[in-house]
Image (cartoon, rainbow, N blue to C red; front, side):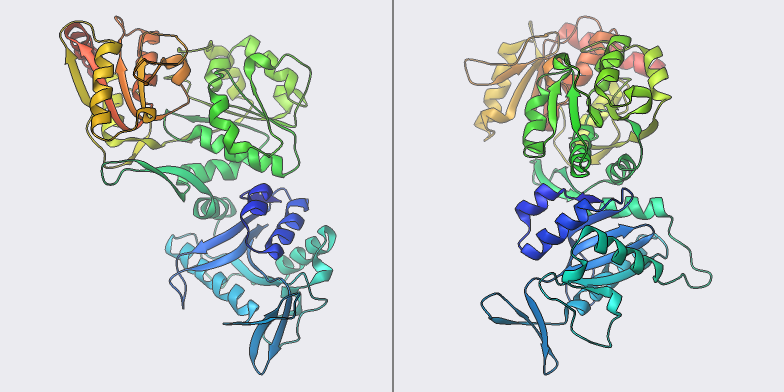
Length: 504
């Protein structure tokens, strides 16, 4: 069973030992189509502003709300209590079953608002520290699990019994499609980093996954080979990291690989402690093979040699193994590595193709500049607000010196130096720190990464496929503000670039 978040996150963040124990059993159940979402906040509730379900489990086509209660559970004079190991009693506002049932109704109201359609739902209580549930006429015995259900085999049987006895749809009801229900649950409960552009600053915060991200995450768990296509800023790398954790949580050996070594710093903190191998493509020389391989910026490796190397590290080989490739084949294919369109056509025929079309990094102003000058589709802008793109016209050279003067102005306005990148479009150099402490980098090493404030300089003399790709990478890195340093000659070439896009 897939856990969202994965078991390592639940072990670290759960406040209840009972929830941890239930999560361990769930993670070991052999049910690849089933998904369990932990600690789900429900925004609609009949008696509270918000409620929380310990687990929401999608098993086959039934949604099961699970309430986990540790320690003893007892009913006395019509009131419910939990009893800890020291014998201390704590009164509950309502019975554990009532908690589970009210959360079930709250979730049903949320999904009804969103037009998902009718689906079967059930509420279950798990009390792993008692031998048997307290007797009552308020619930079926099959819906309260105790010590006896705290093994993989017995909990699997218990889930199957719940599904077999689930309610059937009323006559004439619109039935929720399983793929829509699955994707909607991923969207409601998968927490993905997103961008908020309020108060003139962009702050990373945890929001629900976009519809696109939820759809891709849902599909990734169920398909052997997938190719995910999206422009810069659509969240490809974030979805990849989440998918890798889910694969590792299923007990598979997992490799994340990529062409640019700079991506090590992006992925490392997101997958630490998960047993996931993180190796740049150039270091795949041994014969180790993996149950699943995830490739970021796959357009850099889309050639015969690259695919042969991948073939050797995927169990069952590329045509028959399990892999996920994330790429931008149209706009970032000429910056680093080598992209062969014939190889791309061949490999894409081996996989399910899905698109990410919602930009979750760039402000609306940046998205419009990219569309206007490059003619590239980087998705619908997810950020409505944000400052307009700032153009700094230089009389002569428009290089690092002018860019640093812009950077100093940003610092004077309260921006931290470490939040500023200067990207030299015509450079291939590794990132360095300038004398004044600013990061100066190139499209080759910035690709796949992002910064809050970006100053672009050293524009190309020709906007051929390579010059255009480098410019595209540079101007799609910022989350908050974009500043472009350009000379009079650069301005003339940019105006011609716009005319080229209009004529297309």
